[in-house]
Picture 1: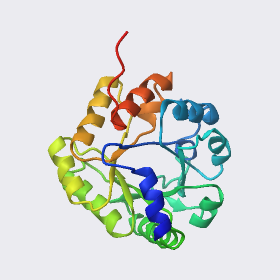
Picture 2 (picture 1 turned 135 degrees about the horizontal axis):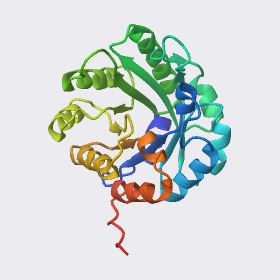
Picture 3 (picture 1 turned 90 degrees about the vertical axis):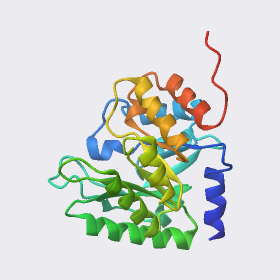
Length: 255
């Protein structure tokens, strides 16, 4: 457990500094989408802009790891599916925490899509990963989504986040429930740090940033956002704005 506490302190060094994490695992599920054509260059731009944690798949670590700076951490995402299959929401475990540590991982990540027919299998994978992370002292991030027909309620998002934490996740990534009040309730009922995810790309950059600020004001401990960041070329200027907000630095003066 000592190893896990050391790694968690690196990710969350104090209350003022929030975690700037970027998932780069989308090419497995969605293909080489816009923004992920050159992962190595993207990783370099994010590191230079101040990202704290880059999360990628085991094979893509060969492109991401060489670009990491001394204070940029590596997450390995261990559960995947592809849009080519008939059960794209069924994420299966494809690697082990021990293998991820061998790649240099500071964190292991899994995804659970609550409310789907395959939820039990994904909960089993979460439990397996939690046991391995506990044994090896590696923080576990659960990307906890609710995916079912119809609108998703704040109660369902709270349920998914709490379930992920109670099954062993050390950090939970979840969707924004629509208001500061509801996100505050979710944070208060989830006993581990909560990160806000970006979801589907929002066209307006200021709208996207307003959600980030709202989540932070409600107690969120950072972000885990991919497409809403790396699909806005050039990535650097927006990433630097986000880093300033998350790391407690004053906004840069306007020219």
